[in-house]
Length: 99
Image (tube, rainbow, N blue to C red; front, side, top):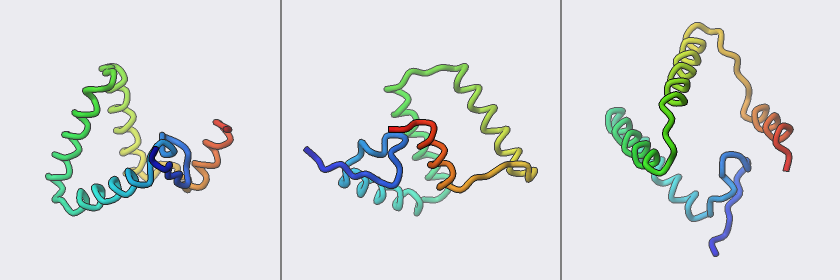
């Protein structure tokens, strides 16, 4: 059985990854960051389409997320976005979802 590789956070499935898979992900991410922006978008679409094939698709949820993303982008552009450090976010998650 592969050795689990627990990172700083146990959220979003991080604890299910092995050290080997984390290493592979880091290598793939580094290679992806070396691509041109157009190539990065193409790769992102390919990965999302592949992942979406295994997931339930909800047009309503997709539309809601598009609106939320647009709202957040506008808040950042207008300077009204609130921010928190990663530490604050994880502390809040730990309090909300204790183990």
